[in-house]
Length: 247
Image (cartoon, rainbow, N blue to C red; front, side, top):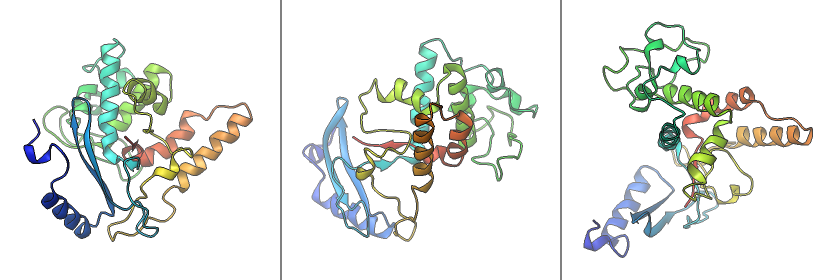
């Protein structure tokens, strides 16, 4: 149910307060809106995409969704369970056996989805062994590592790259034509640029995804496919911030 004052749009008093919060945060741009019956009842763009160029945020602006990509991954996992291809109560190592610690070998897909695996959010180094900090399932602890391991399982079960898994199981069925798990040149002009904590544009923020895109194009021209491990070197660093969201 939508409060009466919100049915037609963002109340002026609340918009003024949001703009004030954005200035303090600082957050250069945002979109406020209300979803009703599976679609936007209204959208209100606020601020700019780029604090330097002052390009205004529009209804078509695409934002980095950061860790909201975990919800997208979870949706794909549920879709695979519905198709009988994923069992939430199977251990991770029964799909991809890459954990030697005894307690880590008890972690299930359900533990990852509920953030109760015990895994840290991120390890200090990729070579460091992945070990739960408590008995899996005993309590909550947010973990990006768990979702990265789940990403590998989705790839293993489907035989597809993670981006293609999400495209087939989430974006295409839901008609999310402006959403992508990777940088795409055809929609790059619509991106809201990332800014740092001082509100300044992050320099070279797209250097790695652009390079990966060029490598993929070159390999396609050479008749080769970009390997999963090559993709993973970038995804490992950026998996919690790789999902881009549009309308």
